[in-house]
Image 1 (cartoon, one colour):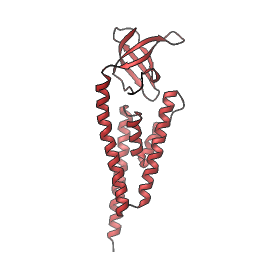
Image 2 (tube, helix red, strand yellow):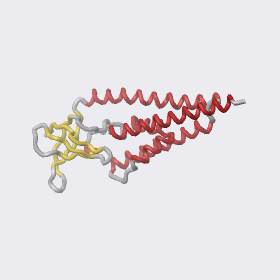
Image 3 (tube, one colour):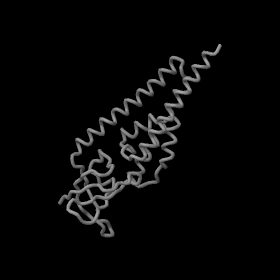
Length: 199
């Protein structure tokens, strides 16, 4: 028998949360592994259907969880994800083009590439750890990698791996690091151009 409810609380960094049953009663524990197919990562407040079971201590636990109106929600998130991926790709193209035209040193482009690859790898490791209950990477570490220039790779990981893309507090700090990094690069480009103009 399937039940309906709403995800009233979701702890993305720990990979679990609680469902409030539509019919009322005790909240039901739900783990990320319980979502069918795991094509969409919960953020909280989504309506779901689930099978009711119990853990070894007799507490209610959801299984085979499916999102209600999953396709429309996924499409909305997919559209947003596509925009951010285009932004990251445009930034990488700008850095590569600037290094080719001499506005930036080639080493800068290689640094962004290396940092982005490192960021993607760390995000992939952290998602695997969250899914399998292993030791997690600190959010401060993820933000530092992004601030250092790995944010294009971090952004790609967020959208392609669906990791850390729905936690609002994380996203606020993440986009702050993106802005700071872009401002630093803009200053560097301006300063480099000014030095070349000095006779």
